[in-house]
Image 1 (cartoon, rainbow, N blue to C red):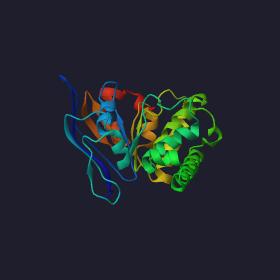
Image 2 (image 1 turned 60 degrees about the vertical axis):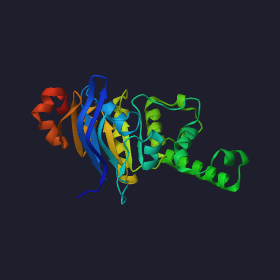
Image 3 (image 1 turned 180 degrees about the vertical axis):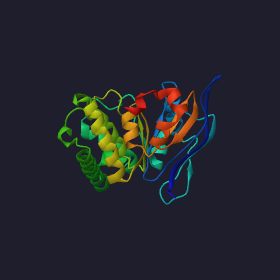
Image 4 (image 1 turned 90 degrees about the vertical axis):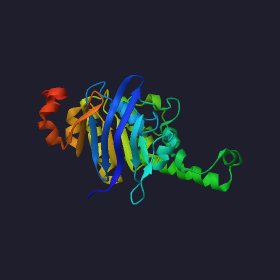
Length: 263
C-alpha cells in the first residue's frame, strides 16, 4: 500500500448560492502522478484554490501527510503555510516576476526554507551570507535540472513561452515540496513544448521523488503520464481510475472527451 500524501474528503465550496465544488474526494499517494480533468467550469481550479489556501472551503477536510510524519489538517491555512507544509503549486496564468532574472525568480522560491530575517539582511552577518550563497547554489542547480541554466541571468520576460512555464515549475520546486500541484502546465504550448513538458514531469517524479497532482486539458499528456485520473463535471466527481479505465468509461466519454481521448 502506497503512503498517502494528500487526503481530501467531501470538499465543498459555495459562492453565495452557487456550489462550485460539491463533496469531492481525492487523494494522492507517494510516487504518483494524479490528474484532475473535466471541461471548463467543472470546478477544477476552485478545487486547487481550496486545497492551497486561496479559498477557505465551505465544508470538508483537507490533510497533507509529509512522508513518514503525522497528517496536518490544512483547512484555513494561509498559502505560505501550506507551502511550508510541503505542497507547492503553479498557476494557469504565468506568475513570474518579469523584470527579475531567471535565477532571482527561483531564489524567491527558497524564501520559505531560509531563516534570515530583515535585520539579518541589513547587517549581513556570516549566517545570512552563508544562507545567501547556499540559496544561489541551490537555485542554479535547480535551473540545470530544468534545462534553464543558460537563461540564469536573463530577465524572465525574455524567455520563450515554454521556458517560462518550466521556470514557474522550478520556482515551485525551490520550496522543496513533496507534492507539486500544476494548474494546466501545457496551456498555450506547441506540440514540441508539450512533449518536453511530458518528459520533465515524469523526470521530476522519478529523479526528484516528488509526487504530482495536475489539472490539464491536453488529454494526450494526461493519458501518457498519469497513474490515476479523477474526473469532475459541474463541481462533482463523476469518475476515477487508471488512464485505461477513464478512457473506456462511457460516462466520461459522454460528458467530455468524445473521441479526443483516443488521440
